[in-house]
Image 1 (tube, rainbow, N blue to C red):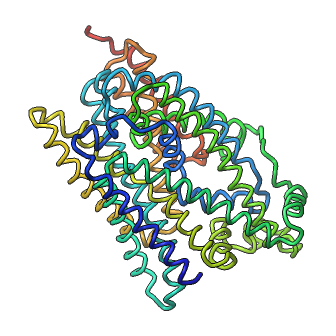
Image 2: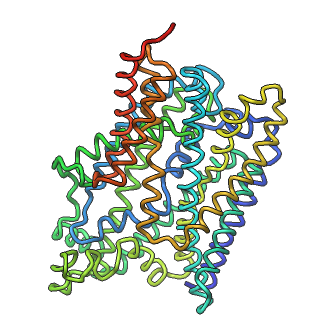
Image 3: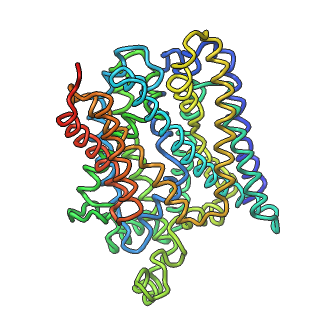
Length: 500
């Protein structure tokens, strides 16, 4: 990487900061700040949805899935579940969001069950989203720190990572504080274009550097069975199977895209349920194409690095006791794409792809958390305050939440990668219980607050046991958690009778 790459990277960070400030004059009410006055076009919301669910982990890790020994396209089975989940959300949940003037999805729970259920779901979202996005900030800062140390060898890694966390956190805080949700969406539209452009640029460079080009890469991929998609084994410990993908992926998307404020808030930025559904369904087509592209980059990387040329070591790759990692010649699949970007891409394009990694990571949750904290945790106790007061509180909360996420990132610097993965898994635990309580509210007409709380409590306890005490794959978490909430609440409603 050269100076031009550094200019591109920091130019991008400065650009999105100014972009957020540009929108500052439009934030007159909480409606403006949280839902863009419901005037954002559906196609921008669709792009924002795609950008929101694409992270640095996706950009870096998905190519590694296809690169590793025995790696292939089986990850797409989960994406097929994502598509089914979007259809269910469009039919079941989105019509509910447009029956009133909602600013958070948890307001529906308040109307259906009362304050306690709403506050429990909102609190879980606020806590877990801060943890998850603090981790995402840390992972992005590690990339920026690696770029910096390439220019300044001998720098203290910890100091550079802390400085990178603070810099990236500050950028995120500024454009969210000034621009509100509308700025977040339009920044994400730009981010989508940047990281898709960066991925395409990387693929083109790879093809040009592979002996034999595109046809040779395809031939190598076919030789090593890289294009296999389906695995019909019913194995709950295996992450990528047809059943885990279709069922688990469906429920995972129903939870993240149907009951999580981080994504649902984007639907609320339009004025009609039909436009929100169009945005969600069209984003599914883009996501499918995107993941096919990232997996294909993994095949190109496999053809470029050609680990199979050392037959003995490649055959032993991933075999217990052999000492050879499955990602031979790398220690992990996540290292493959960054190695190519920093060492083999031309100057300028390398900076573009690193900027694309930042684009995939700086999708801010600050406004969504602030919206939840204000509407669901603060307003119920301060109903006499004016909208101007709530707007001011929202701005201060955006700043505070940004500092919290920076603090989480810094506190996890010394954590091992396994600890980071575990923290991400813990953050995903809320998806099932919250989806379950929405299903209870929708389909169990006799269920009341006490039944919903019992169902959520049982689900959270079971999911903690599954996470720490079993080897069940994460793709099943949302399905198990939501169905546990639903059926325990159903049983509770039969045992504990209503007074009304």
